Length: 415
Image (cartoon, rainbow, N blue to C red):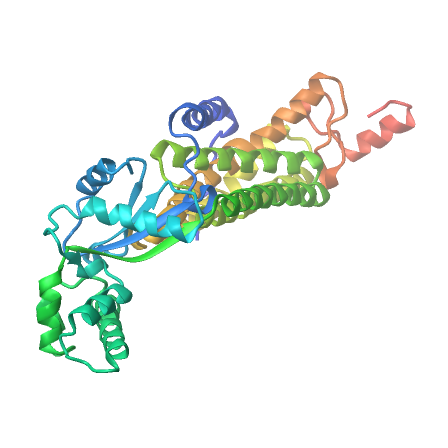
């Protein structure tokens, strides 16, 4: 299948427009990382406390943010979880302690911030532990239990908490929900000492700063090793300049992708790093296709200028590039639109990266080869790009035929 039949687009003639485009987005991303949003690392890398909250109604992010600000949590980040109908929110607190005390403090602070109309003297049943319920029931003794009171109320409290968390998703909307689950006397007693808020905290997690720093280091080295591996492979498979061009191209793609996260103020998590590593391979694969066609055409078009050979090679692979990149882009776009909040950062990186990676294989990688060859020619050095990786060019960037080189060699003329 072909989108274009014998295209003849002068890509190298537009290299300055491509350079301007790349400079604009690269500089914008660098400025954002240095002066505006920085590199918005997720909790995986910077450490922090994650509080998972479920509401009985669609939550208002602005109201939640304002409530957290009133209790000194103004730097907290709010993120929707799951489908909108689930009414779940992830609150990322900038608390980097790893103790059990810090875990409880984070939960208590969020509860205090969100509980705006708590009745005096009553506790929140939706955010009470089984131990709190058991102690309350043991003190009130609504079942008039005998010697086994402690065990009976512990079982009742655990049954209520399990029903609340596993069946009702963490939020009881009415005390009537407990009818049929426990004795009516227990329900009546709970109504005297508890009330039902419109939210429930069902999970709290902590990622320590030491773990975050270790993950940062591992992510950095993963990217560096992948780039180094590509450089070695391409230098062995083609020529060193091909490897350098591919690594520069991939660095360009990575810089723009990370810059897009900074400009959009989206967090970079472990899944985003996985997406970036995927893009490094994807962009490099697309670049290798163009490079391989250039190498083939160098053998067939010996009398052509290198810039013409590169242009011809890009045009010959253009249909394949658009077909594969287009289908991949549609897939990741669907993932971005319908994949949910958990995959939002991963799919956003893929959407940006595939667009930039496809563009750079045409607009960045190939022109680097021509620019390097022109630079060597101007210095009077022997070119390094040619059939089989051998220097074959003469004056003006035109390849010298094998017979001419042999004749010159016999006459004592250096080729």
